[in-house]
Length: 226
Image 1 (cartoon, one colour):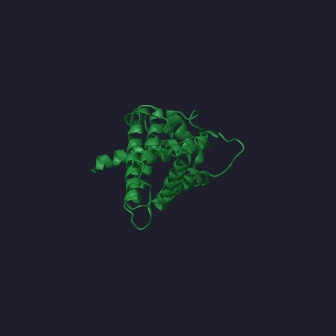
Image 2 (cartoon, one colour):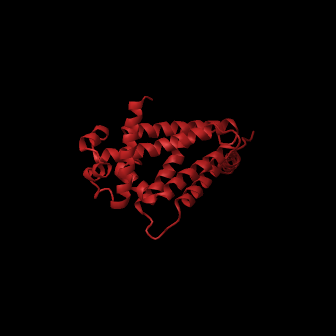
Image 3 (cartoon, one colour):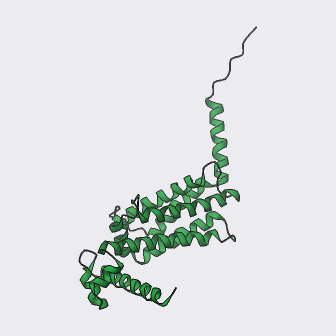
C-alpha cells in the first residue's frame, strides 16, 4: 500500500471511529454528519468522498462485523489440535463475547443495517462467504468422524446459523423483556444441543431407534397355509 492509500485508509478509519463514538454517546438518530466532521475538523465534502450517506457508516460497521466472523472461522479451519465441535464452541464464545462487550452499539448496527435479514447486496455477499467457511468446517468434522454424515455440510451450517440469528435477534430487540441471560449463555446452550444432534454417536443411536420402531410398526407377513 502506497503513502496515499495509507492516508486514505487512516482518514476512513478516523471517520468510522468518530462516528462510532458519537453513536454510542448520542444515539444514531441524534448524530448528524455535521457533528462528525466538526469533531474531525474536516469538510462535509471530504466526508462524502468516503461515505455517501450516514447510513453508509452503519453498513461499513456491519461489513466489519461479518468480516470479523469470516476471519474467525478461517482461523479455526487452520487449527487441527482439537475437534471440530470444540472449534465451533470456540467460535460461538468469540462472537458472544465481542457482542457482550459493546451490546448497545452492536444492537444499533444490527438493527439499522438489517444485517440479519438482508438478502442482497454487500451484507448478503459476506454472509454467503461465512456460510462457505462454516460448510468447510462441518465437512472437516464429517471426514474426522466427529459430525454426522447423513446431512450436507451446508445444510448443517444453515441450521446452526439460523438458530444463532434467531437468538441474536431476540437479544438485540429485547424480545425477552424480563430475562437478562448473557448472550454467551444463550449461544452456548443452543450450540450444545445442536452439536449433540450432530454427534455421530447420537446419529447412530437415532438410526437404531428408528429401525426398531419400523420393526414394531410394520405388520407381520401372514404365512400362507397349504
